[in-house]
Amino acid sequence: MSVVDLHKSYGHRPVLRGVEFQLREGELLGIIGENGAGKTTLLGLLAGALKADRGKISRRGSLGYCPQRIVVNDDLTVTQHLRYFQCAYHLENLDRATELTERLGLARYRDTKAGALSGGTKQKLNLTLALMHDPQVVLMDEPYQGFDWENYLNFWAITTELRDRGSSVLVISHIAHDTERFDRLYRLESGVVVAAEPVGGSATQAKYRRVAS
Ligand SMILES: Nc1ncnc2c1ncn2[C@@H]1O[C@H](COP(=O)(O)OP(=O)(O)OP(=O)(O)O)[C@@H](O)[C@H]1O
Image 1 (cartoon, rainbow, N blue to C red):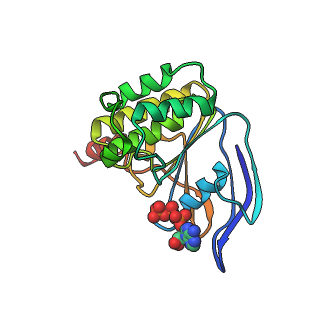
Image 2: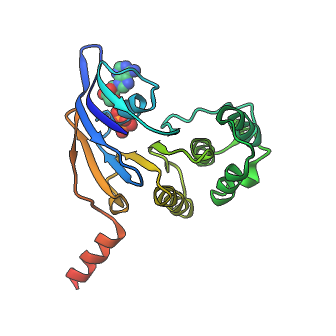
């Protein structure tokens, strides 16, 4: 995916003022930024859910989009959601979806209506729906919100596998935490993206501990 000179305003308030970057094949890219920096706006534009004022977005391959706002139907069960998206994605079977629900601890809720799921469990469904067709370009907005530690680690295992299989993966977050997991990192500030240094990862903490001792 390539992004050139992307602009977006809400009324007279500019949010993005010329965003440019490339998301390469087999790359795990992170974009971090403070609350209100425009991350969700940027991902909405990349996914085609919002319209840019100016600029160009090019993409090759299928898209998986995990929006920050969970879009599920409270009256449908987990399995009904999977079947619905199976039709939308033209999938022959639900093998990958089933694997994802098992790895994320969602399988036991397969007959539960989405409206009765906890926030973190709903987010697991949101994530599964974005990944169940093994997309070539994956866009995820705060994808591990509400996850417990074990599922946070499961999320990263699934994400790095996707990257290793050649998918292009973009994760955006307001938390500059564990950023060493990314191949490259950008910060969104003042409406543009700039290269950022990884911070706060477990390897960094280990390094700090070594220096301190
Ligand atoms: N539909 C809208 N109409 C008007 N202003 C909006 C709209 N959506 C977002 N904004 C404003 O645009 C700015 C960027 O919002 P956005 O949600 O993209 O930021 P963010 O970086 O994702 O924030 P957060 O980390 O809190 O999710 C904010 O000031 C927000 O109030």
